[in-house]
Amino acid sequence: MRRALLALAALLPFAAAAQDSGFRPHLAQEVDIGLYAVGTTRATDPARRGTSAYLYGELAAGLHLAPGFFLQGVLAFEPIGEGDALGGAPDGGTTLFRRQSAFLEVLALDWRPDADTVLQAGRFVAPFGRGHHDFPGILTRIRAHEVNAITDSLGISATRTMLADPDLGEHDLSLAVFTLDRSFLSSTLATRRRCCDEAYERFNRNTRAQGGPGNTGQADNAVLALDGDGFAWAPGLSYHLGLLTRGAGDDGTAREWGYTAALRHEQRWSASQRTLFFAEGVQFRNAAARPRTEITLLGFDPDTGAEVETLLETGIRERRSFTTLGVQHRIGAWRGTLAWQRDQRKRSVETLPTENHLEASIGTDLPHNFTIDAGYQYSRHAREEEGGLGTAHALLLRIGWRGL
Image (cartoon, rainbow, N blue to C red; front, top):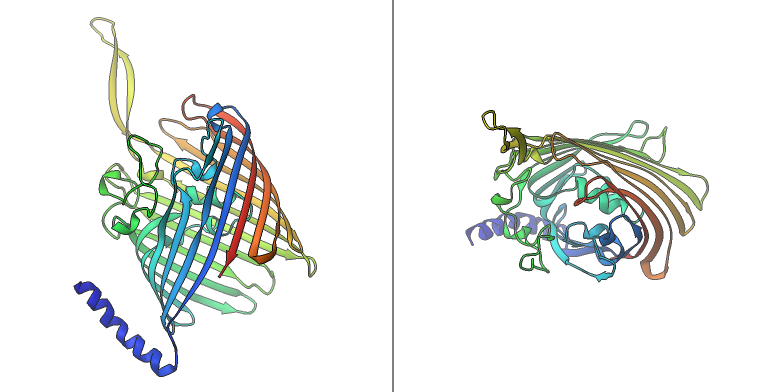
């Protein structure tokens, strides 16, 4: 209660200034959500065959309390089962909204003291990669979100426009310092884990015991990012660079480091035709903070010659690289997208093969802010139980709606 009263007292000067300027508090909102269907027609693993349908997207709202000061909230919708957001394992049947859930992805106070500065405090997505937010296509953005979205970040961030020049472009520098959110805000708002079902990736608030990078209980994790666009010599070009560092949780043995670089270029051919080229590369060193694991060593007793098993605790040293290359061409309300994504995980133990995904889709805008996209995906994916690589062919569909 005391914290709430202090926060209210801190807002009083802003409210008074807003009244003097004629400003009235108001609420702005935006919805971007889609109904996805992934129909796997052929796959090496029988469990992957079938159809999965689910909701994926977000509802964003901003309560503007005073000029340049507002409370931002984003409610995310997605299935929370392992792999469900990418089709999961329907096991030859059809799954509808399996493990569908919603949770607060963002709840933060934003303050813009001037036109070049944004300060934020609360729960947010750290500004590491950009593909999980704006990749075209159907599953490309979801797959990027699974790999490099730094969610559940609780802390502070700042963005400052360092240069704004008609020829040299506009360049923004961002810094975020955070820890993994363990508060009640990290809980899901729907769908709780059922007894003994280990397929749930998240079903309750984060805890120290679950470990993982960034789960240190301290603000010793950070992201530094640089964004630029508005080049007179290259209209439609933009870039993003990011550096990430996260401490090890209880199950980790080393600090994780991440690096990302992204480029986008939109070429306008006419009033109705344009082409977007996009690329992003992300790499994690000591991925997952080098978690502990046990391996079994086989040897022989020197006295008896009998085979002996010895358990050895070690850390999984992993360098994970996630790459996306794609192109989208638009003609009026129609669009066609071709994208390739690669997930390479080089490990010291418990090795995993490199996965590749190729997606092609075509879509159009519909009346009343609806969109529809249909496509095909070919995947070479890691087989969890049998090991090695498997293949899968899937038909994709997304019906989306975006509005205020």
